[in-house]
Amino acid sequence: MKVKDIVAVLEEFAPLGIQESWDNSGLIIGSPEDAVSGVLVGFDCTPELIDEAVELGCNMVVTHHPLIFKGVKGIHPGDPVGNAIIKAVKAGVAVYAAHTTADKVIDGVSGAMARRLGLENIRIMEAEGDGSTGLGCMGEFPVPMSSEEALALVKERFGLKLIRHSMPLEEPIRMVAVLGGAGGSDAMAAYRQGAQLYITADVSYHGFFTPEGLMIMDIGHFESEVEIVDILLAQIRKNFPNFASYKSAALDRSNPVHYFVV
Image (cartoon, rainbow, N blue to C red; front, side):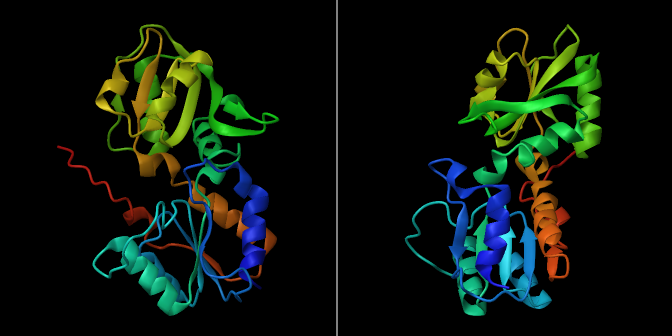
């Protein structure tokens, strides 16, 4: 088994060519020709994830968020990114990220959000090309519900401690749009597609001033996207059922955002 074999499976699911122009999905550290002893799948490529991979005997990690987004001007052990790079290179661990590539396929991040909510008629929100890829998903609740019922459902289905949201709607909600991660800037796209409820993360203060008929829920970046870890792992296991592949045992503790809830 080589790195390129794992990469081929991941890119059949989420093609590298569909990533956003600012993104850095793909093979970040390592050679496609390197042999692979095992793969560890996590959410962020942290120094701790590299340590976990080494302990498991894995020399490849796959994450959603890229280890390197922009040009690196220095690599130092005191910096989390630098430390992860140092550890990966020293241990010979290949690093791959499926970021906006996994965001833009319907079986990826946003599709998982829509399915978790039990939405019907799920489709791409901002379709690109032939319409099979793009950011976000749209769907409908099987039965219209009040804003309060929708809040309770979202909280329960995503296991949330809290939800930041805009003014509740007076009318029942049927049409829903979802976009995992930092989707505050796409609220108007959801509104133009007819969404009454838009569920995303990282919404700014001003983003909660919504047009009439649209409610926004911010459920947290990690919380909206974390299911992609299981999805990526499933792609590897489906194609290589007898190969050593693991989900990070620390995944549930890896959210860098903590909440103080009274």
